[in-house]
Image (cartoon, rainbow, N blue to C red; front, side, top):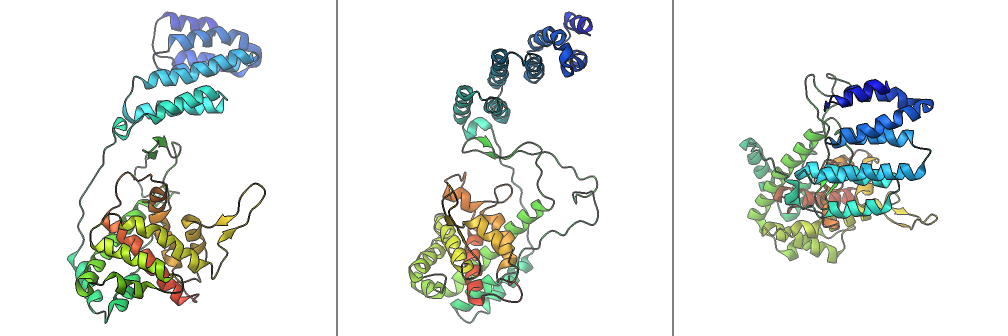
Length: 394
């Protein structure tokens, strides 16, 4: 095997498959490690043009030299360096991926200095360096939907009734569990590709290659966005009819879970929205979390007690919404999964609460997403008024 592997490399063939096949059984058996070592060492240099191939042979080399800790560390450093050197030849996401491979390897092997250096290199990448592109498409909605929305708000007898009607909007339909299709609920011949999410503020990969979205996630996001368009239109109709002042809105919004001062801020968020001020969502998001927390604390625990070195605290949006979803007897629970997607679902939804709270947003949330945040405030206000019911209310 050793002679055959050497002959393959003497041919100056850039294809490493035969050498790898010959080397594998030698690496797997400790008694043959002495024979594998020169082959792995030569292969890691011979095939260095391909970083992934070189790393594969370097890993083999580390396995057969595990009795020499100093030698293993040098090899592990060579693996990380192979990735960082290769990253210099790439641009865009490919460069980020190479640096990520290097950083993960350095971290896992305890190479703290390299790990720090690589992360510093990664942090110098800008959104422009990633060469990301937005994909946009136009879609139409039947005019009958808008006509019905306008008529429904137009029938309101006063401002409070109009706000109540907005809060009564039906929950976006949830995708049904597929009776047909494969074990993941995907339709036959429907292609699913492995995906990575990138937080461009790092930039950093948010989760590992191979993680797929839950079946129906795309439909949920689209349903959320389309609902936002309708809510935005209803709020427009409400404004056209009543032109409420901040004072009037404060009176309408004040309630058991919204003290007057917070009601004034929420009223101001509505006013900013109607004035097309992009800051409306930044005012509304934390207020929605507070409304939800004060509503839930009347029914379920929302505090976390200190334990050991872990400090106590209060629930935040994601946990609060999951608690609401797990309490189907509470009013507003049917909206919980949709608002979780909107506010605190990092793997699929707009995730507005987290991106705003941590200044990780890449662009100002769209107007219809802001409308959904305002809807959340109205839904939880209505839920607090309804209290605990025999059935969840939308």
